[in-house]
Image 1 (cartoon, rainbow, N blue to C red):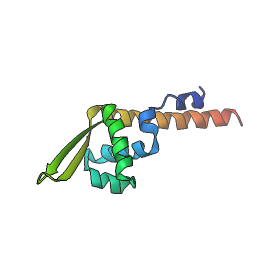
Image 2: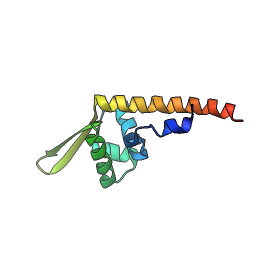
Image 3: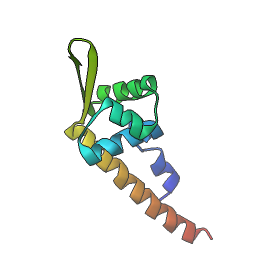
Amino acid sequence: MMPFKEMAKLDKIIHEPARLSIMSALDACTMAEFLFLQELTGLTKGNLSSHLSKLERAGFLMIDKQFVRRKIPHTTIRITREGKNAISSYWKQLDQIREITKQWEKKNK
């Protein structure tokens, strides 16, 4: 089996580095506030919002935005069951690709 073909099958929504860090963080803690995720990932507010929207459209996250005292936004992000399955599957695929690559390297030395 060629490891390079397997790499092309990785979930492209999760594979992007910023989204991978968001999904990995939420997989570990299930729920986080927007500002915590921003600090954790080092992304700007706009960049984080954009990536969260893509992940939400994919069904991987649920975003709950409320306003404290009608002015201050308080945004909470939760990973969905589908999101947990997707990130778990992603890491399993990477592990398999790593093993296939090791075998391929041994055969081609």
